[in-house]
Image (cartoon, rainbow, N blue to C red; front, side, top):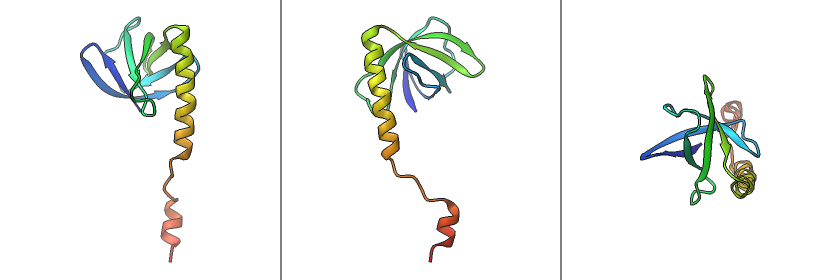
Length: 101
């Protein structure tokens, strides 16, 4: 999940296909090619990233991180997010709950 700031609008979206240079944003409508938006990741909530919409398809908005400095910070943020997600406990499978004494 991420928070998307577009002008005066604030919306929640989902990032997919995250890479060193960008991501696919799903769940946010109304974006157009070359729009500049800011996205904030849940782990790095104090710092939004400036991104450019490279294109829009049925899958969502294709985002590119703007600038070398921003890309370096983005790369660290996605590593931090991956580590955070790996540490989040997950619920046991339903079968394990049903088989519990």
